[in-house]
Amino acid sequence: MLDCPNPPPVTVVLDPYDDVVHTRAALASHAPQHGRLTVHPTPGTDAAIALAYDVLAALGKPVPVAGYRHLDPAPAWSIAAAWILATPITHLTLLRAHLLTPHRFRALLTLRRRTGVRLVLVCHHRAVRAFLERELRQVDHSIAEASALLPEAEPTIPQRRAPQAARPLANRWIDLPALTTLRTFDESIGPCRCAAPLAADRDFFPPVMPPVTEAEVSWRLHRATAHPYLAAQLATAAFTAASTTQLDAAHARDLSANGTTLTLHDHGLRRGCMTHPVPAWARPLLRATALLWRIGGGSGPLFSDPLRSAGLPSLMAFAEGCRIRPPQPPCPKRPHGRRGTPLRVKEPAATIWPVCSAHYGLAWVRDEPDLMQGCPYPPPHTRKTIERRKKGWLPPDYGLRELRHLR
Image (cartoon, rainbow, N blue to C red; front, side, top):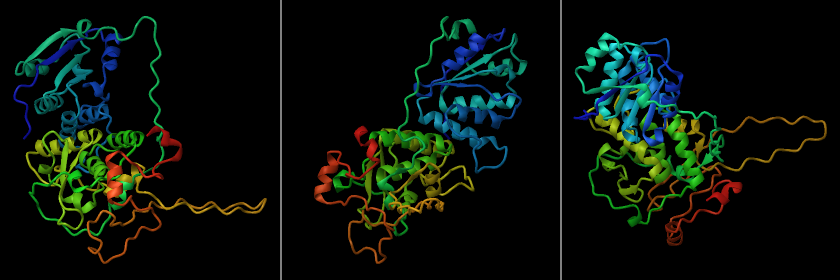
């Protein structure tokens, strides 16, 4: 069980007059990328699971979390703790703390003990409830005035906020060549504890993503699901070009302690066991998955749920939900009808997940033919392409033509 031996003291901020200036200051301090989280509880509810969903929503995760028993708060609080530990969250400010109930406050203390986050409770009332005073006597805490910790957030002359940077790939399908080998005819892999060499030492370099594509994939995966293992599994397939068999065989111990390397195993059908470097954008996803196992006090397959969720989408269905897919066959040309003749509108074709053995070390390991269905193969692993990959080479037809200048 993951536990912080000496969590920071709880800070109680008294705002007896419920001043809107102090509330605005607390909301303005919300910056998860800088370690500050502000939670505004959903009004009209006192359920512990609702407060856990409020914390997840503040982290940018979609709620409610599917796959668990109805009204069971334990999985939601465990997932929230895993995301807080995997991201640079150090401060958690809770508004309307004077409305806390005993079970909600104990859940907050458990979250504080698991993560070591600095908990700030803003009480918009003249007096703290009796049970809250009684519970606070058992933990280190301090009391402060709102005027000291929550100064005025806005200047006297309101200024317009800087517009957020536009996302060039927003609402577009992203074709990743690394996903072309997701469905392969690999055999089942048993447990492995080998000391795998680095992928670069085996001259293995998966397809490189342009920076604009990498940023968009990271943005979508962080906001597509609250389940860490789903987002981490798809992220791993994107930066390793691994198959589902390799992903299913990954164990929690295969991820390094700092989350910078991940070892994937096979029995020599492809290129052998290899240790892949984890890019910076994918490290929080994989760390959250490993931390969720540590919170549960166990160890098992990295890309599985230790909380035993049910009814979640498969990896390929999740990828389609994120509008991420392998390269698709070219669209057929639309026939030009005669003037005045209405054209039949065809339904959009389903996403094709091809089967490919382009990353196999030997050409004769499979008897079945590659079912690429018109999709382009990933760039071949020859000496010439390996040297170009080391220099950041990308296939000439990779990505959208109008975005190539952003690479």
